[in-house]
Amino acid sequence: MKHKPRVGEAGFTLVELLVVLAIIGLLTTVVVINVLPMQSRAQVQKAQADIAIIEQGLELFRLEVGRYPSSGEGLAALTVPTATGAKLKKLPNDPWGRPYVYQSPGPDGQAFLVLTLGADGQPGGEGENTDLKSSQ
Image (cartoon, rainbow, N blue to C red; front, side, top):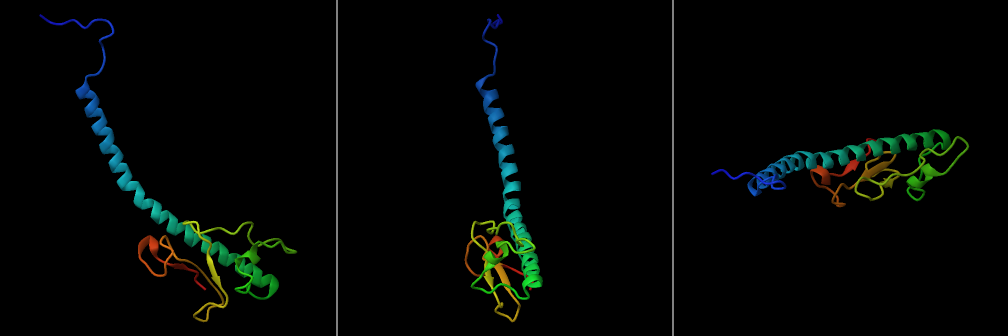
C-alpha cells in the first residue's frame, strides 16, 4: 500500500535540505578563496594611485610657490587654498587608515619622499606589507 500525502505534507526532506546546505557551503568557500586575495591587491593599487595623486599635487605646489612643502608644513600644505585653488581637496589616508609619510628633502637626495608602510605599518615587508614609495 502506498501512502498518499495528505494536504499540508508536501515539502522537502531533511536529506534534501542538508544536500542544499552543503552545496551552498562549498560555493561560498570557493568564492571566498578567490575573492579575498583580490582585496589586498586592490589596497596596494589604491596606495600607488594615492601616491601618484599626491606627487601631482606636490608638483603643482612647486610650480606655484617655487619649492616643495617642507617636512614641517607636510602634505597638509596641499589642501590650503591659494590664488589658484588647493592642490588637493582632501588629503587621503592610506588604504590601511594611516596618513602618508612625507619628507622633504628625501633621504636619498630626492626632492621629496611620500610613502606608506603597508598593511603592517612596519618598515620593510613583502606582499601587502611592502613599503610603497613615491617615484621621485
